[in-house]
Image (cartoon, rainbow, N blue to C red; front, top):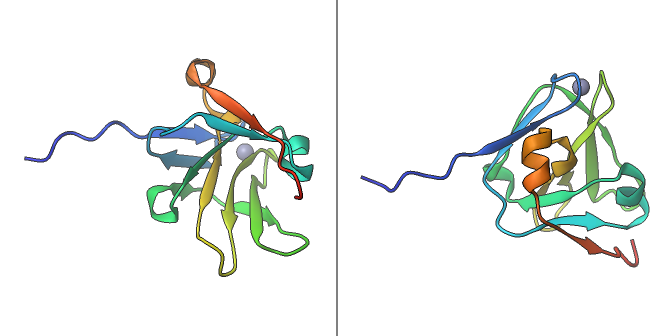
Length: 117
Ligand SMILES: [Zn+2]
């Protein structure tokens, strides 16, 4: 038998219409200070697309070079995750600010200046 997998974590938006489920963090969450992440106040954990499961309907914000799609709840407006669109390396970033308070308080994070973005 395979070793039991560590339990997945999930985040929800404020109204709980969106739920994103993902594996435990492998490194500290990243507080990116680029032009958009700073405004969102996002705190990221990065995964491959097939590791992340999104339930609920989101709407997207895509701008500029159109390589990133920031996805938010249509109801409460919480930005839960971004996905890479186009032909760059596929990636999903989960916004760890959406964790329950108990989980959020356990989180480790580092800052990145997001220069050039
Ligand atoms: Zn919501």
